[in-house]
Length: 294
Image 1 (cartoon, rainbow, N blue to C red):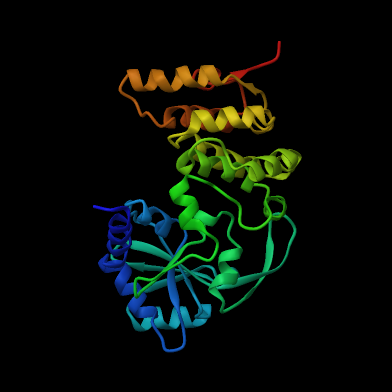
Image 2 (cartoon, rainbow, N blue to C red):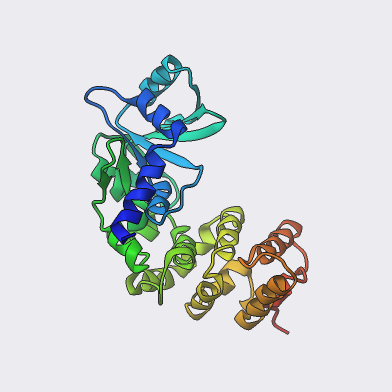
């Protein structure tokens, strides 16, 4: 089977999912558009179909709710101020968000207005591989070069990397997390430099957001290499509060594998999570990557 065949097979698997196709049919309306967006499309291109499906639509939130009710779907306005309605069908949740355009941002919260341009909505996203969308007719929409980047194993910011990081400093961690999962070779040069230059912005983030993102990074296949890059960039100490020993991280991951544990760093992630909740000394697992100055 060729790469093109695998690509189409993954996208088709997403569209023929009965729950997905039903939600799309409920939201279908003349003059309006609804697409599957983001990570589910990205992963479908890799032959990985998950249960988390996000949708973007030109429908206003109130119309999404009205159509959901007409289609016997439960609708919860989980983020209606930002245009997000969560629909429930067949025991699954679907986040449906009205297309948006940024009016202004302070680096954490964006002021948005509703729009009707899928391309403009895609430009709001962080990386090209996360800006893909798929319409119900099976057409893949890629206005930022995300599919090519995905094939190349390249995690690249949309637009100017420094600008995207100023919009939300958590994107520094997301850059390394997505590279750890989808990247091949060294991180994108522009993204890496922008992350390094904006290191101090990490201090403005809540510890909860940092911890959650870092734990996701540690569960990615390329966690070891990503952490090493973060250390070289001077970012690791800002995140975990101490200098990290990557060689100890490597031994910790190898140890979990030798004992039949997970090979994706999740045991290490749990150790770090416990320590951050306790706010006291390091756990035995975390000691594998942290050295306190003596």
